[in-house]
Amino acid sequence: MQITKSLSLLLAGSTTLVASAASHDPFRSFRPRGEPVTMAKGYPNVTIAGVNVIDTPIVRLAQEFTRNHSTEAVFKHQMRAWLFGSLIVAANETLRNSVDVEIQAVSALLHDLGWDLTPNSTVTSLDHRFEVDGAIAARKFLEQYGDETWDARRIQLVFDAIALHTTRTIAYYKEYEVQVTSMGISVDYDGLRTGIDNATFGRITTDFPNFDLKDATNETFTAICAYKPSQTYDNQLQPWGERYVPGYNVTGNLRIDTIFKNL
Ligand SMILES: *[C@@H]1O[C@H](CO)[C@@H](O)[C@H](O)[C@H]1NC(C)=O
Ligand SMILES: *[C@@H]1O[C@H](CO)[C@@H](O)[C@H](O)[C@H]1NC(C)=O
Ligand SMILES: *[C@@H]1O[C@H](CO)[C@@H](O)[C@H](O)[C@H]1NC(C)=O
Ligand SMILES: *[C@@H]1O[C@H](CO)[C@@H](O)[C@H](O)[C@H]1NC(C)=O
Ligand SMILES: *[C@@H]1O[C@H](CO)[C@@H](O)[C@H](O)[C@H]1NC(C)=O
Ligand SMILES: *[C@@H]1O[C@H](CO)[C@@H](O)[C@H](O)[C@H]1NC(C)=O
Ligand SMILES: *[C@@H]1O[C@H](CO)[C@@H](O)[C@H](O)[C@H]1NC(C)=O
Image 1 (cartoon, rainbow, N blue to C red):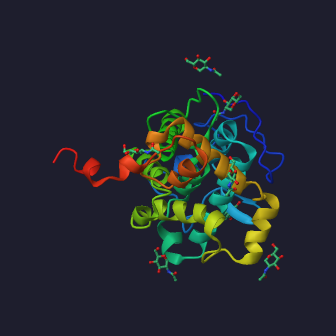
Image 2 (spheres, rainbow, N blue to C red; image 1 turned 120 degrees about the vertical axis):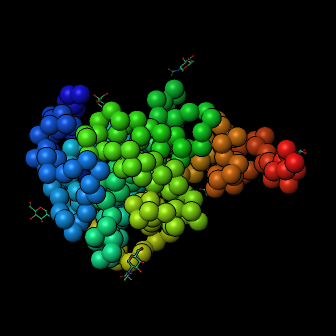
Image 3 (cartoon, rainbow, N blue to C red; image 1 turned 90 degrees about the vertical axis):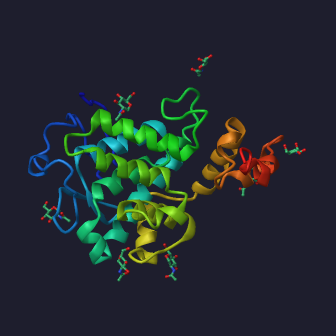
């Protein structure tokens, strides 16, 4: 698949991507199928907002793909989530030695594809919660663009990292890639974690300002509660439905007899 669109990384500036995902990657030939890409082992890298991150064709394509399907606010959120997650890994020896950072990069960059509110979007559905829309779209993205290093296990980890990113009571007990994807995302909403100090946070939000994330989240959650309420009853979108969407009603879904409906 020939990709001709120019990819303008905000900071990698002049980078233009005119390469196929499967060629021109000198690093690729050194990697057996399924082999994790860890910080300890090293990889092609680039510095974005002062953070050293992996720079492989699939990571660039993930940025392009997410730009194609995101508003500017959501694009920047996903970039920050990637950078924060990368810093969380860099600050911890266990994580440096074991986290597959290409998985964390792709997962963080694609985690909110389910927020695409474009009518008839190819990355969303009416019958899946937004996290699952994102996970399915990311899996398709990897099936289309991923090279042979993307075995079933690595693709599954991306799927899980995206599907579970809001369900931290599960995600934080899964594989490290699933944990750090969710933790990186959480920094935008919940604040600093080990690996990200105030100065680092300031540098990242200077290059990828976060002033618009609150409104973007509010608007997206409200829109999702309106267009597919049945996919918002078992996640954190309920308050938006109840507050802002006329006719939204979770009462029936919370009744014990609906849980025991076959018993
Ligand atoms: C980043 O790339 C440089 C070479 O360009 C290399 O020396 C360095 O080890 C790389 N860093 C990581 C973390 O892979
Ligand atoms: C992004 O959109 C452009 C323009 O429609 C398209 O040419 C390009 O292939 C898309 N990139 C990806 C990775 O889907
Ligand atoms: C590093 O990360 C591992 C895995 O999440 C965790 O168990 C450990 O406590 C961390 N180490 C430090 C020093 O934070
Ligand atoms: C979306 O799909 C529906 C049904 O196929 C069609 O009627 C509508 O025109 C489409 N809307 C857009 C913006 O493409
Ligand atoms: C945190 O960084 C911001 C700039 O990003 C600065 O205005 C603020 O004073 C800093 N706070 C602390 C406690 O250092
Ligand atoms: C969310 O958006 C609604 C309008 O859709 C607005 O009335 C409300 O104040 C916003 N809530 C927050 C917390 O920003
Ligand atoms: C919400 O659903 C429950 C159960 O189906 C029903 O009893 C209740 O009247 C509904 N409330 C509203 C405001 O529609």
